[in-house]
Length: 242
Image (cartoon, rainbow, N blue to C red):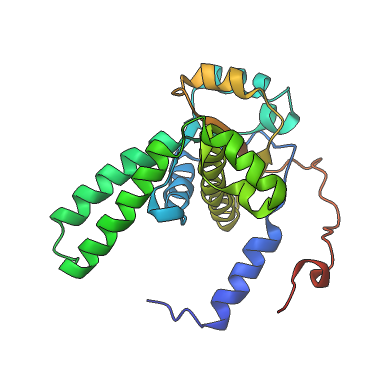
């Protein structure tokens, strides 16, 4: 196994991170299925709250379906010219399914000692209670009132909206991992938020309660793709030391 402190690892990450750009115009070269599959494999290893992975990554491979999803992305050039599209779908119900599978895995594995099993059972029970009973509509106005006085409470995973926001936030971890993995493979990407979520949900037959935080276009940048000097806010404004 490579030494994680090897300077080469850091140099490679910097190269990968800094070559990743939002590309809005792709050429006709198709990304190989095995490369898309490899990128998705890395994406599902992203961290998530309670390791509950409250999301699905819909790989739109069918050409006709891809064209319809691209239209639902308001005709964005990135969507129309992409080799393939990944729809990131989040739903608290996915987390409940994961919790059940995770519990069965822990119970049936010899890799966990009794103390660890007790810990994970306690964690899973807590999340299940929050996701089952904390998602009731009645919590939404209560959280809204509390957040008015203390804004930090606005992101609690409570209420029919709060639980979906929680799921979407966790899904974005996987989305970012996917785009970094694509960059490491030399594949360009573009995260898109401008789309008709209702149309895409209907096209993909997503279950009720699902939200779509992102649609990600994958492909190879065209010669005409606009790639300009990268600008970000000053690090001193973003990184606050205490």
